[in-house]
Image (cartoon, rainbow, N blue to C red; front, side):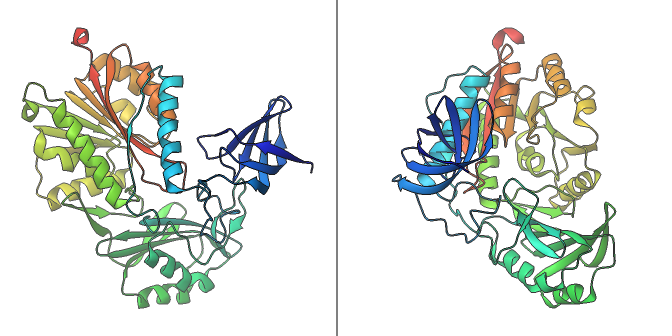
Length: 418
């Protein structure tokens, strides 16, 4: 393949270096603005080229040496080649640019909360297995990249994976390891019986307290506890195999405290204790139960039944009585529930059109929107901009060394829309 010399002038939200040459835009892996690199194209389109850096001719002051041995292959991280300071600026700039480009909202600056621990912060690993090899997908492919250690994961998760790696069979397709305060849950995916040596190795580890096999989309308990239990924001939460739980505990607490602050800050008439909050995509009830002491009532809605079962158990576990959890599709439930304030923490695709239309119909006083995708966040804010103003927004770096960033916003209903 032909190699070209590129002057990198910007960085895309994914962390690709951007250059212009011969009327084409180059998106270049492992390149930082201000650098001059030699690159080789691996995908060419009429208006742009995707390329990989072959040689760095002039390095940026923000360039760092990735500590990960498989960084250039693995698709897990994309920003390890730049300093943490530059990563934060990229994430902040991405949020600001998306608000301007998609929602037509101009914000000069936003606060982004740094991750106090940029390595070994993830409490969950989702390994892929193919032909007996365990690891993560290679960037831009489904090839497995094996590794000795993933620097994003808690140390004990790496240790558990190492201990059973030699017992992985070709029948296995995935392995999930979750951490909580009381221990670790391991979920092995296979349609065949799991090897005795793998199960016995896990049993020998007294930190592994729950083991499941996922077989034909069913979770079969092999041994140990039905769930693991973690503390978050002063509350206890039971976590089952299919339940969603944020992967960075320290930053999740920061995120939820900002959301609770927004909830209270929006209470101009000092009557929050009279308000009912609807929590969409409530999962195992983390946000609902955390804000319950500040409001009259919270209704949480979630489509995953196992998560709703956890949420109900978690309410009892924490002796919280002013929360109700409903197993339903949020698109159906939002029109049938009476509420004053909306909290939404949707998946990356953002809010469905039916949810947006239901919000327009119900017109809650305030919306606290937590998002892991600032482009769909901006889209949804824009679709509601005639009814709501963006009062507050902050970003939280939950996923250091990746391009992902979490945002929490407060949207306030316009006075003429009462």
